[in-house]
Length: 319
Image (cartoon, rainbow, N blue to C red; front, side, top):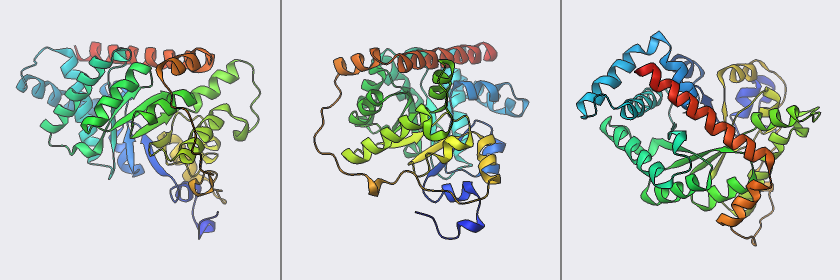
């Protein structure tokens, strides 16, 4: 399927006809310039923003609000408030949603994850932010997914991140997650490091993973949104044209805008044959499938460690 008038628009504009484009950045100026539908943040992006002099006012505002709420000197509250103020500022620049991440150090504690998510939402309410525009971002551990189940039942919408295989994706969808973020680039990196020769985007295991997840969700009638994430090249993005959402760095959004030619829709829910008989992913099945997938095990653990390290660095910076 080719959209009308593709000969006059660049590939980013063509992609936007099928896929909601999300900015993967905490840079407010860049978000305003790119005009995406939504934006995502994580501890790494917030740390980069906190080091930027342009955001000194936001940090000062966070310290003031932290004191007003009766939590002066409590670093976990200060970092949560910083994240929510960043989210509020982003929502002034996008028409859609923003994702705010739960501390990755809580990834194996369901109760603590739920409590942290409730706190983040309470801060957003204090800031008069529409809760329907917030996605709480939680790592795709079994414990995290059970927290998602509780939060979604309470009406808090969730983005399940660090998704590297079908077991994580299906468990999250079956828990009622609003959205999942299956990663492409980190899977690509893992297989390249393992010696795999990846000649084209169609051969890319990361691209193949997201395609499989998307088609399985559509076949089973699962309503969870699939948002491909973690891209290394514009070719990977083009290979997922038609995915529900794609979260893309500013550099790659700009590269897509510079590309001419006709873009082909690769993923189309209307072309997926329905599937009516399948077995839900329970805890033993989830843990076995993760254990049996060295790539997913490695990358989930590494992703949690990276986000935890940057969360700690953010706390140190704000001390």
